[in-house]
Each structure stands twice: as C-alpha cells, then as structure tokens.
Length: 125
Image 1 (cartoon, rainbow, N blue to C red):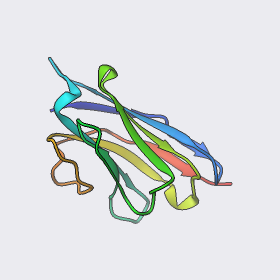
Image 2: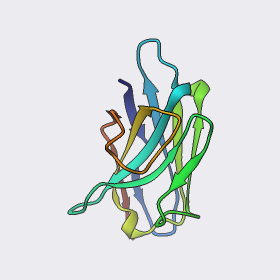
Image 3: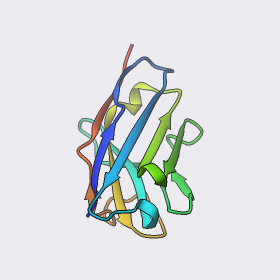
Image 4: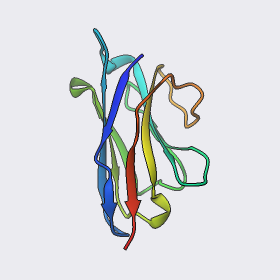
C-alpha cells in the first residue's frame, strides 16, 4: 500500500484558487503504475469523487468541477496536484487523495486501497 499525504488546503474567498498536492511513498515505490484520485466529503454529505488521473495521464472529472479544476501528476516527484480555480462555497470539504495500482481510474471509492488523511478546504467570504 501507498502512504499518501495531502497538503495545500486552507481558507479562500469565493472565486479564489488553491492547489492541493498529494505525495505518495512506499518502500521501493514508483508511482508509475498507479491511478490517483481526489475525493471530497462535505459535512453531512457522502464522499464524492472529484477527479482522477491514470499513469498515462488520462483524466476524469466530476461534472461539478469540470472547467474549474485540473488534475496533473509529476511521477518524478511522486506527486499529484489538483489545481482548483473559481472556487465556490459548495466546494468546501475535506479533500483526500487515494491510489490504486491500475491503468484505469474511476470516481468511485471502492477500487482504491490507499488513502491519505485529507486536507480541509473552506470557501467563504
């Protein structure tokens, strides 16, 4: 399993931007064969898949974030990024990254076997 650590959360005004990072590590690890996803959970709501990226760079996005969020990865740094622009109060949640050894990625939580602790994103004026 991977050890995943998120960072970059914080408080931002509506319309603002944040960039989240997810750093992966494990003994003898290379991120090359892993799909990585971002999920979020808002208070009182179910966990929601936000975006994911495969080893080859294919991406998926939830409809609610298309055109505003961009996922990317730097395998040399074992890091996946989530650039979030035009943030809305509805984006307020704990954002967690998850990983699975797979050539595909989906926005469902079940396939992922490694999870980070999460980072809080709050969008408020």
